[in-house]
Image (spheres, rainbow, N blue to C red):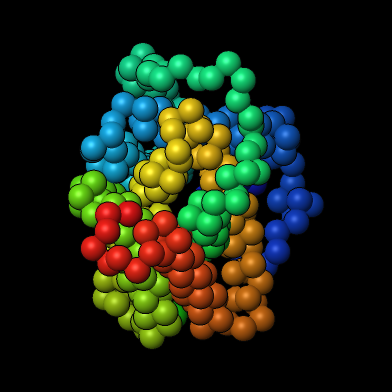
Length: 325
């Protein structure tokens, strides 16, 4: 039972710890060690990627909006930290995780029967297509995804600590900031995706990516509870497109549906690498340069993502600002 105390929510690395976490400080993860936990996370990643590709096979004119609706599930996951916060003191870490697993099992039983491959996969398909990177729109879009996912989740991981240490917010308000960001992203997943079917996913991502970058720089000047709550709502709304429009962008840059799976997988690989290294680097910057350095790092990454997506659009349609892209 002592092991259950090791992975309490407030001790989980990468979300609240400012120092580099070492395995000997945290002890062995319960029930199988690090390798077992890594396999669980990998399984979640494979399932998520499959769902994203599956949606793209059923829609053409309403693809972006359909993807946005499907992506709202990520925002509705705000229930999970609330469940952990409420149940862990009462029933412990183990049964709290099992409760979440039962919820996920129930929702999966409902959805999985409807997930069917509509377009048959080619008999032989390359898992990796280097030739795709010779197409400048696709190459720039991959850079956009990479830099975007390096920076997008930094406020998710660090806003709670910032609210406590700088804004002097109460523990309760600080804890629910992540839920507020996710709540704001619900509309951020639906509204821009609805418009993207008319304007083009690249055009919409460029606009929302620019605003998200500006908000990241504005984060530097926030010093009170009201300001950090307003930032959480706005950032949640404008950052949602990084998740919901990545798929439609890659579909729009693929020559046919036979290549969508490979190209989207390559793009998700880029996003995974960015997500893996972005926040740890932010933590190192925080230790050495303070909050302003971390916030500037976040803003710079989102600006690079915006510029990359803008370059992808220019490479695809040129300087025709009325073109759907």
